[in-house]
Length: 176
Image 1: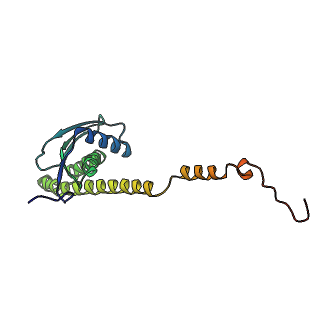
Image 2 (image 1 turned 60 degrees about the horizontal axis):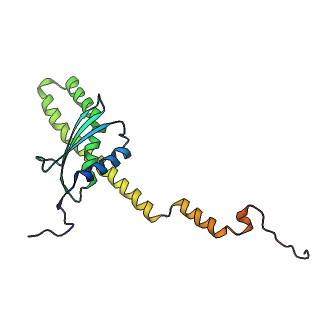
Image 3 (image 1 turned 135 degrees about the vertical axis):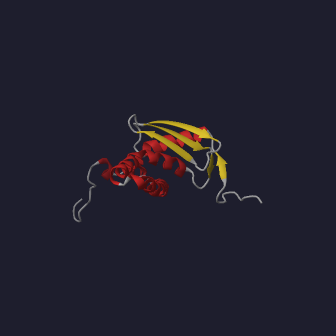
């Protein structure tokens, strides 16, 4: 059975250039310009669409992406891995809290309990960022740019005295 074009679950093999372009755009949007990102691309990753190894001490991250991206996920895969950079210190703090506050016998259970929640928080943040960018993009397309409207008005009124900065002369009745 063939899948229809655009059907959920359809994968598309993306070239490295696509990842680099999208990664650079999202790095800028998310304020991660100081970070050194080292992306790698693999045909398949076991059980994941992407992986991030973050080194907060040197502001660098190794990102690995699965090349055949689910079409409906698009940028979310990239944003998800970049969000791990932002949440990595939070994860380290949680690890520290577990080590300091949880009895040793149940520390593994505490870590196992928190890890899936961290992943769902990262996923929610990634979806929110991509959705916000989509709304901004659609608003820019629908609404005319203020500079475009101002230029159109200037062209329409260029020959009138008001546009030249002088007051229009109005003749009062009985004068003239």
